[in-house]
Image (cartoon, rainbow, N blue to C red):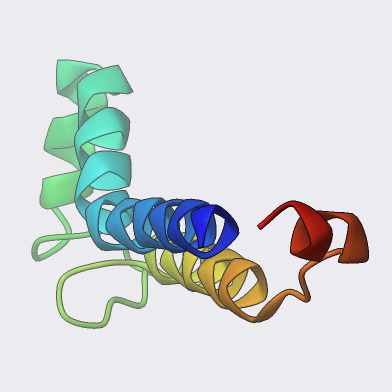
Length: 88
């Protein structure tokens, strides 16, 4: 029983990271730019000229969130080693 709760906790942490990733990445990116870079970026009708956004986030945001969700899936469906079955 202990193995399943630890696995669930780790998978839940990965899901929480996936939910927070797009916002955290955008906040970090905005915080690292200079005022001149922010002014130039927003002078092109709200974003960079070649930036493709979906629901307000770029592909780096969504690919990072997908990576965290994939990690959560791997943790959730990973087999339990035999040595842990004997101690449970």
